[in-house]
Image (cartoon, rainbow, N blue to C red; front, side, top):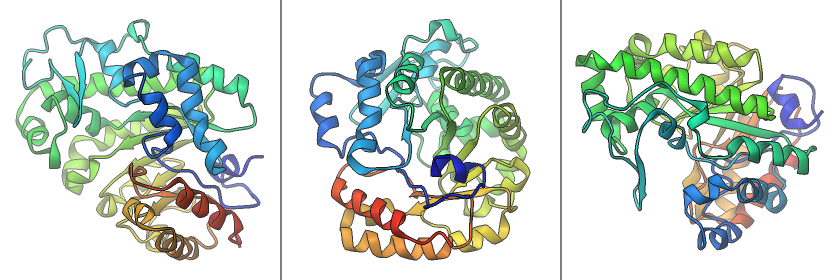
Length: 337
């Protein structure tokens, strides 16, 4: 069995698996060349381009798995949301800030999804049957923050106002929860080997608000998906919530760079694996610094049979592919015992 798949299941494997969040992206010159001729929408509408971008880091870096190239916001268009992209990221024109009565907003309609992500997954499986493929979705509060504020909501300031004092929050939350479940199941049916939920803004909530407003819904998402394929849950700033994830029970909890993996392993149940957690800035700074911290992290993860090496967040655009390749070689050379 592939080392990545074996680690997901806590089974014996030869080397520690490694991949990088945002590994198919702006730091690669090959991606930049494609990006000159296509925007995000056009790339995600063409399964051949999507498949090509998805495989680039596997060929360039020798990572143990690919992750399908897409954007967490795009499925919202199949719910009636109008999305534009600018230099700062996605903008939802009819987000809740400008559409408080939810006019034109509806449950996720898979038939209205115009992006051919599922075709790209099937094409990848056909062309690279030996390479595991991860599907993904945005996390509940992260996606909600975009549709509520209309754009990136630093520290969830506007999102918390709606969460605490608006009756429409529950309706929006339920629609996004249903979207995440359906969207991940579509990717599973298309052929992915695992899925990851990216909840980049979760750590902006207190453990209390997380418990009160989201935890039950996240448990429902995880339970709906875990029986069908392994699930990795990623969130930044989740050091104060690690124990709460024992009740959520993903296959793998992906940690950001602020968390000590050894300590996290003592808190989590043994059946929950760990992924992470090299500081993306260190990876972008120099090969020497990145390799040094990589070795420290590997030492902290010693003895974990369900451990996957990754960054603590996505690859920064200024990161050298040569540094990432050196990290991969360092991880693969490290004794798993």
